[in-house]
Image 1: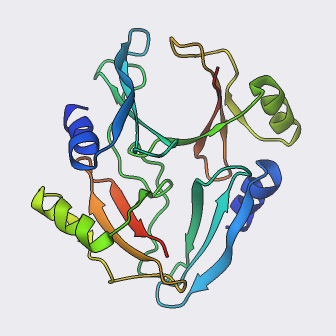
Image 2: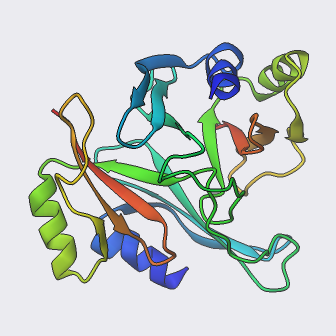
Image 3: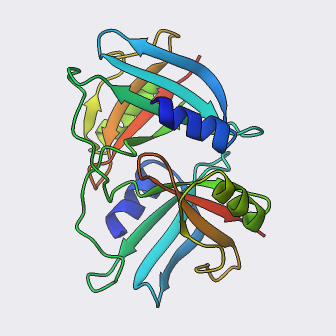
Length: 119
Length: 119
């Protein structure tokens, strides 16, 4: 949780909506975040080892990745590289028919993050 | 893809932003959806069995669920039940300290969907 929270706030610049809070009954903790200027909420969850909701961490195929709109894809990726974020797909390597540009980076848990510059 | 697209449009009422399109190089297909009145995009992806991006479907722990704001949680859940959607957590069974009400239902791939009525 600590590492992820640091990544999403300090590296990606999201702001905290509801502060990190521990829930007794679930032995979990949660914090909600949003990007500045957005109403879309991202919730980070962590469960203690002895929580009934705790399970082995698995990278799945079902919900594949999250995406953020960016204004300048090249500049964003360069900045994230300086902050030692792993870049999985460089800008320009793939792109849809409608000319959007995208890149992918990795969060501390290995989750793919799409950065999307829309025309 | 067909079953999921039907679920998200006909059952949940989302609308298509970019129509279903097949991408030759990846042997994949994608469609983007949004809820009416929202700018948030949900992308559905499917890859053919012989696509380099095709992998065994796995329910993971990393991106746990997606959530939709609803105006009337009880009415929404009743409507989804009539449409034969599986309800995983009934309204009122759990809830945060700030009084939001929530329920969980399942999509055709087993993905948990949170329905959230915020105060």
